[in-house]
Length: 265
Image (cartoon, rainbow, N blue to C red; front, side):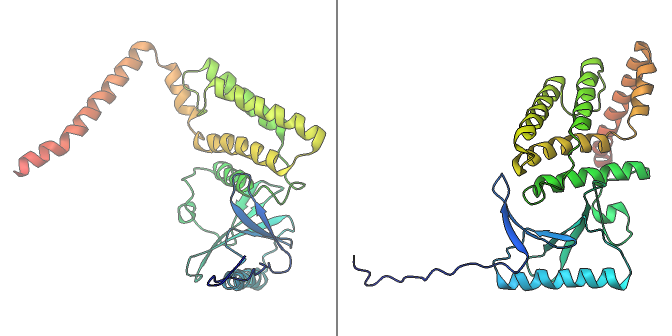
């Protein structure tokens, strides 16, 4: 077969820096992890030499910061790095696997970290735990032996959510009783499979999705119970009167801008 006139590009193998490995998430996203203390994960394309140098720079900056400020980092921790497109800055967070929370090196207000508003330290921990499970969901391929999924606890939470949906008109769980039953079935099936074959990355991803759902529910519903208890104590007449007041206020509020606009004309 003649190749005259064809430009043949030679195959160039792609290499990663020492200690790094490439993984593919069950949904197709590729990411990279470095076997170190702490472990490092990133979605930046480490097959690019420029990106390699950038990520190495930010790892050194992180290590220098910890050394300079005498900040101990557990060997169980995991550092996520996200350099910007111009490679001039880098977003990060750390994951504490044993305690199931994310954390940062600096003390800062939750809103500065794009975290939802919280009212107590317990509430904040629920938010950080939800972020932890989101991280496990996104990066489930490289730490199969280190993830404690606490499946019995997860089943208990889902069972409670199912009963809550069946018995309460003001349940704070975002999924109905039918969906809760389906989540429970998924957890039980995965737990049975793992008993025979071990908890592989695909099963970890499945279970972490369930944990993400329940964790965000617990953080978003924090503090709503007092409202639910108050509502349950109102008699039907009071409830209707309260609703009529709310309706009248909302109607007045919606008409106010139009009235002001008319007065300006």
